[in-house]
Image (tube, rainbow, N blue to C red; front, side, top):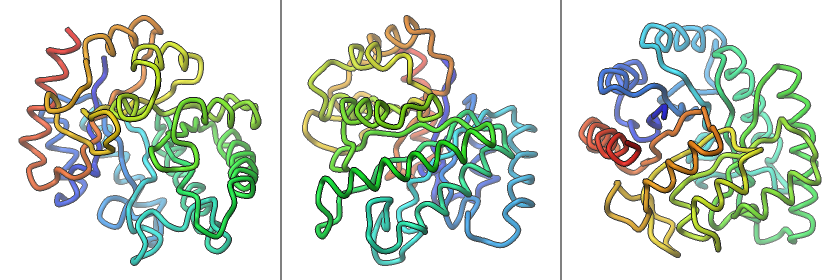
Length: 274
């Protein structure tokens, strides 16, 4: 297993310092969330700043996945908005994702992870789905032209909230570039099948794994050992499908104790995967 740590769990650190701590603790990579404090995708000289981050990653021998779930990176008032489903502002979400793809291409990232977004109250399910399919069709062309792999993450509460939703979307888009990101906690939170069964069912599409603990029916990312995830079977399933990507810790609300939580998380994951 190659373990990574999400930089959204190091929100109070400057990015170079976060990368240094993550590498020093023994992680193999990072899930880099593009945000104001960590490689702002809308700041000046993005290409130059990306090259600087690339140098830091190379010096620390860290692999990278690009994450696009910055809370207020587009709107200072509305978390995670606008999305691809919105009537107004969807072009800004598309711009963010296209910039993420460009960053991923420059860094040689394993994948760009993104989600569908929550259905706005003024948009019907049918219209939202049509918008999502159209946007994904556009994104897969943009990504494929740059040699970048996408990984759509089913997210509780969003239009695509489970594996079945992803498989339906994949069938309509029909592109290998539209891979799958699985958050292990989400599998316990809202999937009818067990996490190992989900991993097996998704094997051919799986390009990125996030990991955290969680309880059934409660979308709250928990430290390891405090939820209901049975981790050894998860790692066994990943081995059986020969998954080779990063397994990155996703604890976005633990920045207040990031170095300690990151160290304890790696100790836990190493033991659980042994």
